[in-house]
Length: 305
Ligand SMILES: [Zn+2]
Ligand SMILES: [Zn+2]
Image 1 (cartoon, rainbow, N blue to C red):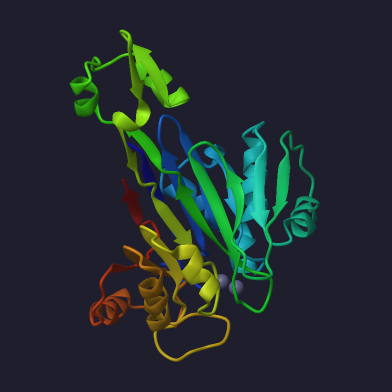
Image 2: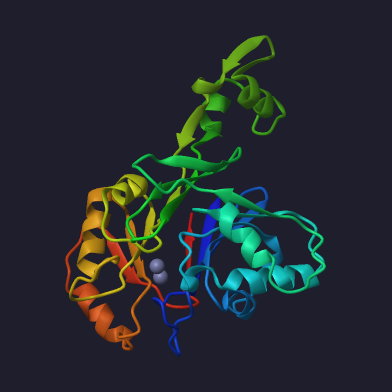
């Protein structure tokens, strides 16, 4: 059983409020091991990580959606604390124009950094979905979005997992536990006591989980494509009433979630003009949807199993 743990470190738009920190989301993927990512890294991110009992040294990849200060100002502080804590592992920073901006912020001040910060450029033009990171369990996809400056959205996608159906396996005479299962998984088949066993005969596919995150954007079709069939779509909803350029309203976020056929929508990047979360929850509840909808607040944690 694998799981994602998603913790909202900051949920405001542009200006922090007493309750909402600048945008950042900590994503921990737990399988046999663990992998930790950050989606955006606004000012105050490292303090939020510490306050919420998370581990910043485990973060290996940071995905920045765009270079507006509310989404990246925490990078310098976080990297500097990693330096103090004697980090050795490289840290990857993905972003549109990462190779341009990451060396710039690293050049500020004096630091005896002993680890590499590796910028990875993410395409920000056109309509193509790009896989920007992939390993044996996960991939991270990106698409360009519409925010008036180079900006992208990300999806963290768990690959489908082939699982052994032990009932079927025992019907074929296989024991409950045996190294044979590793061999069958690796080679697609193996011989057990003279009988050839095919993986397809004793397995099923567990669909991978998917989380998508819009960053800042107007409603756009690229976002719908990226978010298709997500278990959780985290979408900006800067405003709850009138439309303003470069951002999305709550009703528009609902439209994106509907078109993308997601299971759950979390709205975040909330303008400081809304100080009363209960009012926002009332608005959310007043809409009938075929999927769950919730309001992100700082410190909120979701587990996706
Ligand atoms: Zn923003
Ligand atoms: Zn922005």
